[in-house]
Image (tube, rainbow, N blue to C red; front, side, top):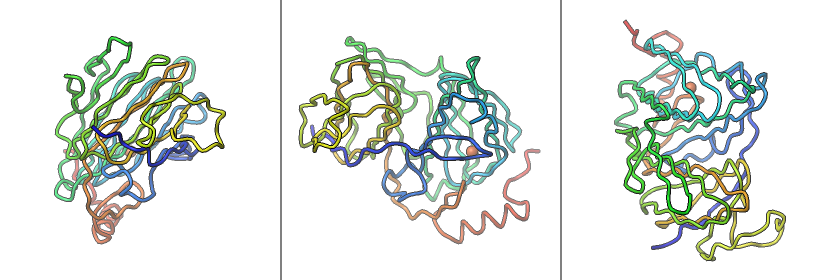
Length: 303
Ligand code: FE2
């Protein structure tokens, strides 16, 4: 067993997206090889309706998958295939854009005006970029939840974990997408196969992710900041932790516990040509997509 080093710890950055949605971007539009097969991760938790209700009106996607996980509030969606629906708290939508889709995603807050959720973009390999578009809508009750003796709770959205298999399947990047809650003070180790690229995104509480150079998992106070510490992440809200190579990750929950997403997948390792919501392998493919958008042949009609 070898511990994965924490290559980088960083806070998500306030970003304006869609028609004026205030969100936090943990990564995206940077070096796409860093977290290959994942391209982008947005945290659209928001407490004020005016900051999210303009939503993400009609826009195209090609060559990728977008994965939406809702924690609070709902997201109403509609697309060029004629699908419409509402994602509620705890639900997941795994959308394979493939050769092309036009859709809109409109967040609606809960009764207290809050909207909490995440969107991840996964890349598709060249031989699947032009595959038929597909949705996998998963309701909260179909997502297996495993609870360990120490109170650690894991929702398994994709992949296998502690004997449970998540409901989303057939994804090229072989992703494992886990929502993990660890009670105060508990130290926990998670196995992640070596071939995977992995990151964690902390969105509640705090904890310390052990680095390979200090696998003891000492919990440090947040205010130690500024000192050289060998456990890189003191975490807190909206923190991305990018892991290096190894086969396990260790985290010790802070005094309020910690909740984070632990996401990993098999790197695709192909050239990336990316503009806005379209991600292809070559510039020519990208230009082709935008030419089709201009001349109205981007999508096949639904009927
Ligand atoms: Fe979208």
